[in-house]
Length: 108
Image 1: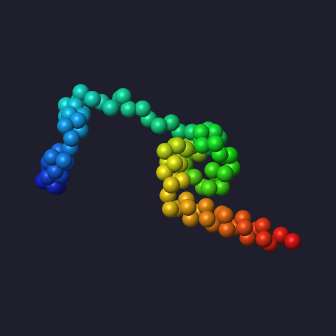
Image 2 (image 1 turned 90 degrees about the horizontal axis):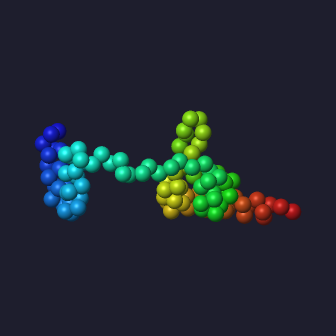
Image 3 (image 1 turned 180 degrees about the horizontal axis):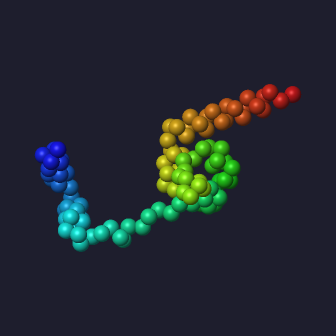
């Protein structure tokens, strides 16, 4: 296991840029704790809707991915943006569109 990790480490180090190597050395030497990285906030569906200019009901209907925090659903904007670009979302949107068309054509 250690041999595999050593080989992988060396291959990665050889392919890395000078900046990446310097950053990795700072972390390995304990000089960079990563505290400067800000975590992405968890948002409510209403907050996400405001940011994307969409109604929260639309996001709920689209079944956007979320996280359960303290028994409440919260969302990361980056997760939702990635989902909206995914083939999974496109399939869901097409199904919702087809269902709506079927519902509208069934009316007398």
